[in-house]
Image (tube, rainbow, N blue to C red; front, side, top):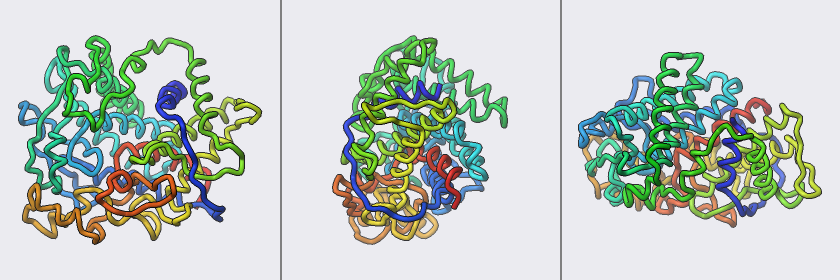
Length: 433
C-alpha cells in the first residue's frame, strides 16, 4: 500500500535542480525538530481550543463555522497563513500525517501522542463534513477571495464564512477521494488505541469513497473561484479511482523511474531540490517523505535498482533525504533554519496573520479586516512565534529575504509540515542527538 501511494504521489514532481552547500560536521537535533513540527499544528487550529493547547497566543476562532448551511463545521485547520479552511490540502496533510505515524510511530517516542492528536483534530472535522447532510460532502469554510483582502487574526474574523460542498449535481471526486484517503489512513492510526473511533473513520471513508466514484468530476470545475487558483485540481481525479486490485509492479517501476530523475548527477553532489519559486519546500518535504519510506521498504526487501550505470541502494535514498532535511534545519549557505523556533537563526517575519498580529491576550480589541495591515507592512519581527512552522524556503540561489510580504518564501503551510513529520521521526530513530 505504501509503495502504491508513493508511486502515485511521485508522478506529481519532476525536473529538479539542486542548490549547493559545503560540508558541515554533526547532525541537527531531529528529535527536537520532530516535536516542533507536530506542535505547529496547534497554531493552525480552528474552533474551540482545548485546555491542553500549548501555543497559547492562539484563542478560539471560527465558532460559527457551518451556520450559513445550518450545520456544525467547527474545527479543522487553517491551511497556511490565512483564515480559510480548504479541505483538499487539509485532507492531503492528514493523509501524510497518518501515513507518517503508521510508518514511523515506533520512532516517535513521546511525540506519538501529539501526532495522534494532530490527526484527530482534522478527522473530527472531516466526520462532520461527511455526515452533516445526506448526499453532500462539505469541502471548505470561508470565502478565500474576501479573506485574502484582509489581514486579521482568526479570532477577529469578520469576513463571510461561506460554506462549500460537493454533491451529485456538483461533483468533486478529487477532494472526496482525498478525504476518504485521510479517513482510511487515520482509521489505521487509531485501530489499536481507539477501536470504536477507528471503525467510525473506516465506515465513513468507505461512504465518502463510494460518493467519489459514483458522482465523478473535478471539484474545481464545480466550485470555481472558491477553490481555484488557490487549490485547483490540476492532475484530475481518475488516477485516484483506479482499481486497487491491480499488481504493484507498475507503481514500483514508476516510483523508481521518478527517483532516477531526481538523483544528483554524481555521488558528491549536495544540495536542496528546487522545483518552483512558490513555496518550494512543499515539494522538498513531500519527496523526502517518499525517499525515506521507499528506502525503508528497500531495506526490508533487500532491494536495489539501477539508474543507468548507478546502483541505487536504500542508503542512497536515505542520504539524499537526510541532506534535504538537514538543509531545512540549517545546514545551508546561510546557516539559517527554515523551521520557526528551531535553532538560533530562523524566519522572524513569516507570512501568517495570527503570528504577525498581537495576540488577543495582549490586545483584546479587534483590529478588523484592514486594521492588521499596519503589522503586515512593518519590518518588525512577528510578536508571536509559530513554533515548528516550515516556510516556503529560499530561491534558486539559496537567498531568503525573511519578508512577510513575500508569501512564496515566508508562508508556512500544513502540507509542508505534514510531509516532514515522517522523515524527522525516521532520522531521529537513526541519528541520536
